[in-house]
Image (cartoon, one colour):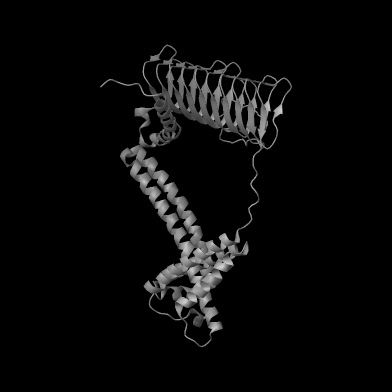
Length: 444
């Protein structure tokens, strides 16, 4: 079968897949690899391609620091904390790292994602650049032969872009030449400085919003979306139109009463169904726990607080234990790394999901059953109490109270602490819910 060169659309698809792989999978592998003992086999901490070295194939690298001074006749896919290209890449450069510096030549596209991105004054990129990160700077003297796409915190474009620029950033400064159109979305609040940014390369200080300096030259249109007008210095030239598109401000959302009623109605029906199951399967369970709350409110509340604190502490301890076991297995038994990671994550999910389910259903049922019996006894004194009727009456009141602004959250928190504490006290006493249907009000 004769080989057919893939179409340009398929090539773009392959390159996009490579970019996503480098941006997301390689950093994850680089993080886990040292724990698993793979780093010595598949990556080095410091990798340098010498100036006289020529690699006649696609290059895939992962390490702490990667410097390419030589020539790569193919694509370069790299992931590291710091990446520097001083040489030449005849294909695509696909890079993911904390800081990425391009000083050399790339004869095709650049796809890069990182915190600090720098295109140096000697950089020559024959095709387009797609970048995402905290900061992007293109130095004066650099050339991008295709389109520039950027999404991130801030960008300073002082070099030359032969085609169009599309960008979305909190702060954007144009100080170079763009032969095509500018299509921008810019905030007006600037970007906050993270304490985890690398010290090198230096990050430029860019004023909030869109700024065009006196050296700006735009060959096409400037279209930007921002709440504030662009700051255009005297001498900045735009050959085409300058259009500021308004950012639509959504109208103030008022609470939709019908929607809120629907949500609370769904919540009520769900609680009634779950409570009915409890009454059928464990008929003495809700009366017993309700009696615990009625007779021991302060101990129940205190043990509820302890239970919540214990779950938080357990989550932290389980996370630390998983990390410790990962480190130990990575050093002693590398094949156990993935099983340990899987078991640790499953245990965390089980703890959090189980706690969430119990918190959302059990305390409301306990407090509603207690309140419903009191309410029915006052409305129909002397008559025998139907547990399901009492539960439904209490749930209606509970749902209404917890739906109130501010007060509802406070009431729900009290219910959670009381309910969890009653569960804890019931477990300590060994009562798993018998068949008794004695009213908890009789104990008060």
